[in-house]
Image 1 (cartoon, one colour):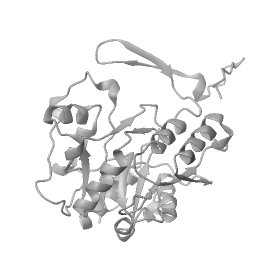
Image 2 (cartoon, one colour; image 1 turned 90 degrees about the horizontal axis):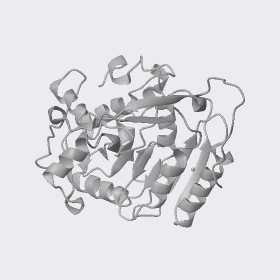
Image 3 (cartoon, one colour; image 1 turned 90 degrees about the vertical axis):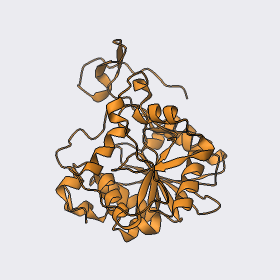
Image 4 (spheres, helix red, strand yellow; image 1 turned 30 degrees about the vertical axis):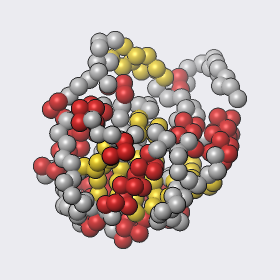
Length: 303
């Protein structure tokens, strides 16, 4: 998470090859095969230790606005700073003039509790909730701040684009509803027509739409969303007023959709929107949340 102040915008050596002499079934020993849109196949590790955090941190450190206060909430089994890549990325972020606040946060109680912990750590007017498998363009935080300042809403987010799907054009999933004026509060519920907006964020749909519309970065627009994940800038006071993620205690530790539920509640009171062009890209690594039985917007009341 990055604390981002209003106005001035305050806001993980070489990799060694480890050879295992026996098969243990650990994620780093497993591989997956993906068939791409052009019919070719991609072979890649199912999981790679320390692969994500340095990429995300480097992207944050390269932001054109600052200084940012970057809060890292580490729930991994070992201290992420044991990794040379993570230590180097932290040094880079600090060398760019930002402040890194690294925190070990255990035991794990689920993603909603993790996000509430980060919200409790926020000290600025705005807070960017950024997942560790996201690459951000250098001007993204600045563009998000400009948009939320202009709209005065509860959040503005950038949907994650999966560039491996750049050749996979899905016209039936590329309907976009641009806000004609200022963002306003709206009620969005699972199962309603507005809920279907989420398919715009599949694959590389938003990439294709922003290319088709020709929206320039300096003239970024906002559009209506059902929800979006991975890169969302909140007005901290509005998120707290809507209850934040305090519902975490009502969910089992293995859940998903906590970001969607919080956004639905914020939208109902203050409005929320997506940013186009996006400027956020997904690393497209395997999910760390394979158990998806409990989906927060379906398990709990939105309002």
